Length: 138
Image (cartoon, rainbow, N blue to C red; front, side):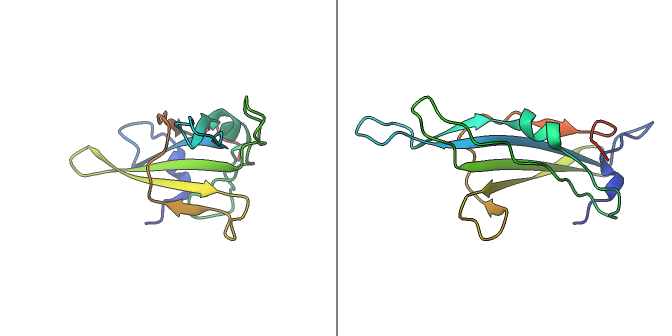
């Protein structure tokens, strides 16, 4: 499905035909040891993504660009290595309800393709941030 470039504009009346929301995390490797219960920790970084989020104006479909946040050291001195980004696309149906499709993308240091879709659920609570215009740089 192609989503029009103006999908994030709120209509003056009625419901928007599409809604787009995101959630993002820095993935920190867990401590290695006998008593480690979690192999990794997911730390929310949605705010860091929103600060750099832009929407190009020269496309006929919805496209978003952002700068990945810098990796940080954990309390154990281990740097984060991956970024996980969830995108939720909701489409308005004839009955007035929305149906949602959710995509989880993971960026790893050794990714040959910049974003890799994955099927596993996130290892953290999901707090969605709905994207709306005019709050994104164009």
